[in-house]
Image (cartoon, rainbow, N blue to C red; front, side, top):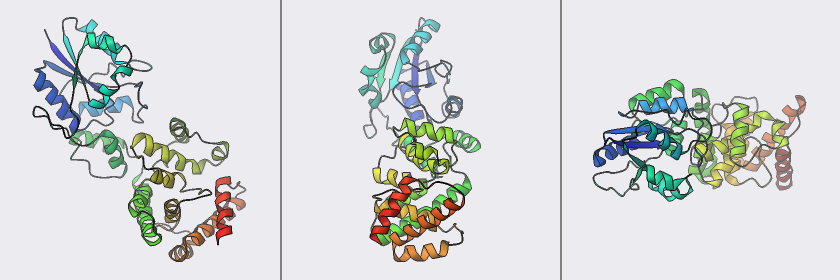
Length: 350
């Protein structure tokens, strides 16, 4: 009887930890074959921004095993039980083993027809990171962490195969920041960190927010709307009336959904870096002003704003808002109510 291991997942992206798991899987169970199956539209998690075709290609460049598009070809939500039924029909004499992590096992009772899955395949659960068993030591990195590293332009060669890295670079996957935009974000990170150190905010959080504040800038407006809705914070009518500022809201959603950022202070700083709002936190204000005084900025009043920021953060914020309001009035554009509320608050403080 042929012994076939099934290794499914989002693989968004597949990394060397996935490869180690698959190799351990094959070796420890003496499998005749390991079939790698990138998930289609998964029922228990958000649909990845990267296409199924690209994730399939990345798997082919990561695993020395067959990669199947069985779930990617299936329309709608993809269920493991349907995959097992199809494979049983294709290989009626085979014995199937289903590999999963501890996190998946904890949710297994939520899977569709999980009792039937237990009849169709034997479950094999991998140990958690730090719990090496039988010679298997998990690689302590996740796809979510890698998406953030790739977003920031960090070196990921320790976790991704050279072929996968080359494909990611060629297709600019997980890298919504263009090289020019990434340079701007690095400049903003430096300015925000400097202000945070001067005024007493967390410099590490200021740096991370600065590095990621424009992460959704190059994403289409339609995708920005989708991200915000998926995050449970759909764009409001006043936001839709000012499309250029919506990338900030989408940036918060992108970081939360795709990059695993959970710190509400960092997410808030990204969300409000274009508009501001009543009750701005110190960290939010450092990023807001840092965005306007970064080393790459060259608008007419930038030196004056830098001087103000070095002396009085609130005064710099107020001046920036007045500068923006004047430009909006000249262009015949409405002032966003969140910016106006913050401005009125600042006027009462200064």
